Length: 287
Image (cartoon, rainbow, N blue to C red; front, side, top):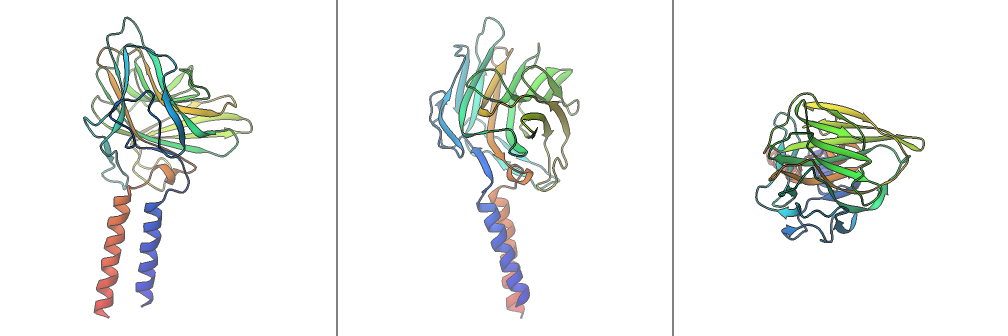
């Protein structure tokens, strides 16, 4: 009887953990949007407010909500599985007459401010096309609705196609592994601050552990940050792209801890809880 009660308590705990993400500050799965043009669409996502804005409108850049090729990540040897559902955000370059520098932003309901502890950001990303001539396709955060970033993290051409993390003026790449087109990657970024200033951002590519910070990651990079500006907007940034290049984002999460943003999908918890329930019933029958 005691064993059954313990199992029941564990099932309840897991169910609660899987069904709620109380410490999540931001969560956008792009499921609440209409497919087609993203700019101007009002969000219903957790922790976000208002409509998507383009601070540097460019007829050669299209920001859309797509359902053409769903995004997902399965850690394989680990226990992180991120399913992007049926929709995701996509930015695509058209016939530009020179380098592109554009961004699409959405306001946070409450900005990320210095001095409130570390913050963790995770997202799925995928690029299509060719990275060359310092192309950069990134998730970015800024204090204003602009192309200037306090933080950028994504993919770029450096010494090969690489994942990277950056402030607005310089970046640090993950040397290995190189990234490849049409492949979905899971990225987690840790933001740290001290006193009144942001100090650094650390990016991990394809981590596998839900409990160990950076656990199982294929690569990581650290970039110094500076300044005390709140990060009030998040979104895409698209730079030096070629015709047909595209960058997709999905499952954007911001939380106060590693486990807030590097979590198994609720279906994983449900399966585990179901297995434990079955064990509990079997034990009761035997007794």
